[in-house]
Length: 70
Image (cartoon, rainbow, N blue to C red; front, side):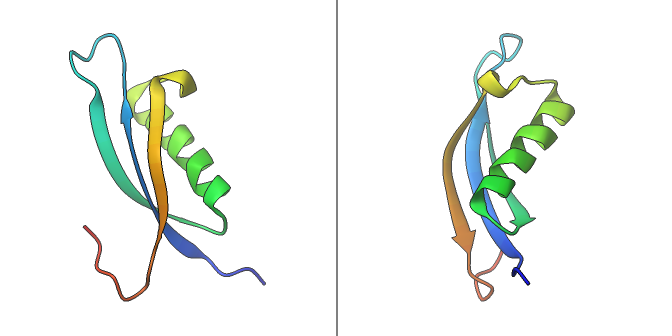
């Protein structure tokens, strides 16, 4: 079976009604990095009504289990 990992995704949402881009950093549980990116697109799109082309992802990194969140 596949092992579930934790990924830290950093990026920003650039919508016209925001005066400046809204930066975010979120930790997501997923099996693969691609699944974490898709989940970010889905959650941020749902929460902020942003289209995929308005969401820019800067980095995706795997968080080690010993590393603290934040």
